[in-house]
Length: 357
Length: 94
Image (cartoon, rainbow over all chains, first blue to last red; front, side):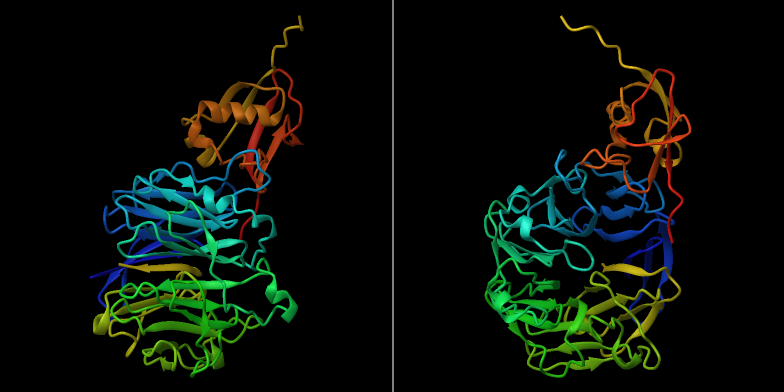
């Protein structure tokens, strides 16, 4: 049985089902509220959800019980008081490697840490106090810290991505950070601006290959990249068969460091699936070539938008399950690593995020 | 010696989820010379409310309206004894 945590514009949906079939909606929580992201910490069983009320601002809630019961508000999810900025949104929550540690990324380019399983949080001051921060440029969705890549077995090593402040790497548990943007040369910048390390690097999503942690994959704002040196430098791998190098979500097969999956959109000025066909593209050779995986997905007049957190995986290898949701409210999945797909749910509110477990 | 100043006492009214966070009570008698002082005093009594009305800058959140005796108020609106301060979510959404 697979559980899906689906954050939508109008609440959190928990679905259960078997891969290859429609799933049952078990719970709707935070009815009417925008739920940006939700996940269950597999170590504790705790459910965590981030919600940005248009009235009351961004919050993290958690529950150790039923999702349709009472949730508690987590403490400390705020910027330092007295500054000139306010927290806009929490984009992602990711479990750390150390016991009880969780990370949360948000706008404006902020990383929070929890050491008690998500009940309380504190800002990562090393990243918050970066001297270059005043020059950081937001992307269209704000200055969002959306990707948090832990390193299996190495709790002090972490990579995060901020749109559009690029990649940031730490090897001392977040006390100090350095950039990881070599090779990220956006088409939207004039050539002379590429030397400016503060010029915007609009990273859309990053994942690490768990079995070969120095390898990482990135969907960029125009480009799909791979790093083989733990995020220090990047090579464009979008040349071999993708209909577009623009898109947001990306995931990997944990069993295979040469694998990655992206869902291309036409372009930044037309953020829908190309040719009205919904297709996931797979590489099994580290990005040298890409092949469409669309058997069972809408193939005609389907102009969907899939957001950066709305693509998730569970399992690995031949049993790799992939799930993604669109702003149309449609949710799709595969239980055979993309060979065949089925509709998991329809007519949900616009999907912001999908996490499979 | 400076003269002793007694802060005015006003009634702050909250509804919906704010009422729940404020111990389930809608009306709260609080001391404060300005709207933001009153709201800080409310947060002081009910820590769960921190961040719900005022953000980290001490600014009233964009889609929350504050009315003082029926007139639109801001953070620095002065308060007199017996004033009634209503905290209301704006009509917004989509």
